[in-house]
Each structure stands twice: as structure tokens, then as C-alpha cells.
Image (cartoon, rainbow, N blue to C red):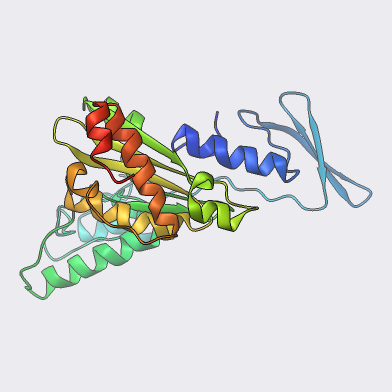
Length: 264
């Protein structure tokens, strides 16, 4: 069990390492067997036998849809379905009803709801516009360092049967990382569909992980060829230059010559 189960294992390991160095004690893959309050302190006994004491206890148990309260059956929709099926225009099975957000099952993110709202509004108003495309859905976990990801993880890409190549860079070893000094922990990981020569996923972890993710999101969404990314100029000294290191590592898996095709 990883700290960030849905992210790349390298991203999770980096954040866990930073947390431990900051004095945060981590227990993963365990459950809470007992909780009690004594002397102004809360004690939690874990399934591995450890006892954790603190002044406050935060319980985060996730969330789930509550469609039954909406009485969807009056509109011809199933209130017990868990999710509402929609097409790429956010239309439901009932003419005249559109659905957006978490209940469509395409990601519980505010930016997904906003994206879907624009598509639904265009369809309602009869505007001829593209439908929904979820190939490059971004997500950012606002820890310190930030963990940004877009598209498929390496494991997800392999599960889809893709021929996968990966490249990874340590951003603390970039010029900006050297300038930043303390708190420069981070990485950029690229996931390439080697048969097509395009990125299908990427992760950006670091002080500005969510911001650096934007250029990776464009690359995944627009299916920019990796060969084209290798000829791109990135400003010096920025966190973004870590992409060049990741690209060199990615291309080195093909041949030493292709690695040299990327900027030094």
C-alpha cells in the first residue's frame, strides 16, 4: 500500500521520503482498531499494533454518490445506478436531460465539472463544438512537494497493452533545483506509447509540480511527437528544463544516438 496509491510509485516514494524527513510518521496498509480520548489526547490503535497519539484526529473516508435523494425516477433515470451514464455531449439516456460532474464517473475534480459544463451548455444551445475527450485529464495533489499527473500511469499504459517506454529526471539536479536548495525534491516522469512515439502520461513532482504539469498536459492532449518535444527550447533556469533530462532518459532506452538528439 502506497501513500499516493493512484500515482506513480516513484511519486509516492518521493513524497513519503520528504514527509519522513520532516518528522511525519507514516503507517500505510493498516486500519484503525480502536480510538480513545484521554487527558486531552486522542489515541488511535492501529492493526499493526502501533499506537498514535495526537491533539486532533482527521477522518477521511472518501465520498460516494447520493442519487436517491434527487428522485431521478420521476425523470426516467435509475436512482440506484450509482453513476449516470452520459455520451460525449453529456446527454443522459433521457432526452432533454444532461448530467455533469462526479456523478458521470469521469473524475471527481472541479476542473472536470467545469469542462463538462461548457460542453453541456454548447449542446443545449445548439453550438457545434467538440465533445468530451478524457485522454489527458490532469490532477494535482497539493502536498509539499506538489504531485501533478496527467493521462495514464506506467501501470495503466501496460494494462492497456501499449508498448511502453519511460523516462525520469531528478529535478533537484537541474540548475533551478541547485538554485532552490532546500525543498528542491522532485521528479518528472514520462510514459510513452513507443509504437506511436507520443506521450500517453506524465508526472511532475516538485515545488511547482502542478504548474510544470501544464506543458506535459498539452503534450499528452495534442499527441505531440516525442521527437518534436526533443527539439523544443525551454527557458533557463526554470523547473521546466527538467523535461529535457526526462526526454534524454526516455530516448536513451531506444538508442544512444536518439538520446543525443535531445538537447544537452
